[in-house]
Length: 205
Image (tube, rainbow, N blue to C red; front, side):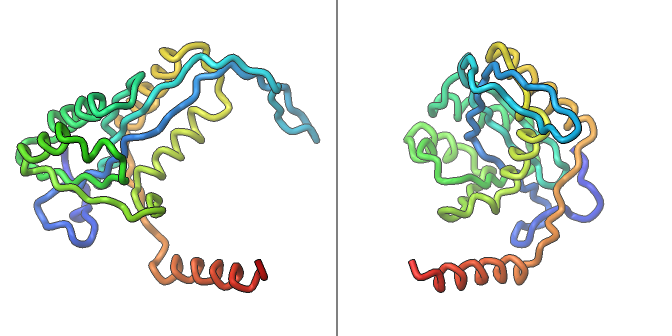
């Protein structure tokens, strides 16, 4: 994979290493829900009834330097599926590159078979987002993007149909990938947090 202009790496990541951001849990519902026609003065509506056909778990890794995504869909969400996805990442990333995995505190990370897998692969470096701060992980924004552009407002009649839609969306993404650009400054973010805290403190509750 070619590196875009600039080193494409966040602060704290040594030059010559590729940081790969990943998250492993996104449970998507496959449901049959009918959209009612919309028109001038009439918003889109949905019927109250639906048929639930099952779920799939999307495992995805976002390369923050290029915008490419590595993915797998599984019908279960155990450490076995997580290890399968890790093997997929290890195979996809060129052997000469380091792998930096940014993850939330998912419980399977602590299972002995998973920790043993990482111990045998010194090129894998783990980083965990703080509690209640998973929004710092850019792959969270990518999950919101696929939800907005492909999953929401769609009706899938089977899990297989849902998984095909996910895979086709990611294939299209990888043909012309675009990395996210972080535009908000730390001062702007902290200022908004402070404003919320002050408003809550004065709420009288």
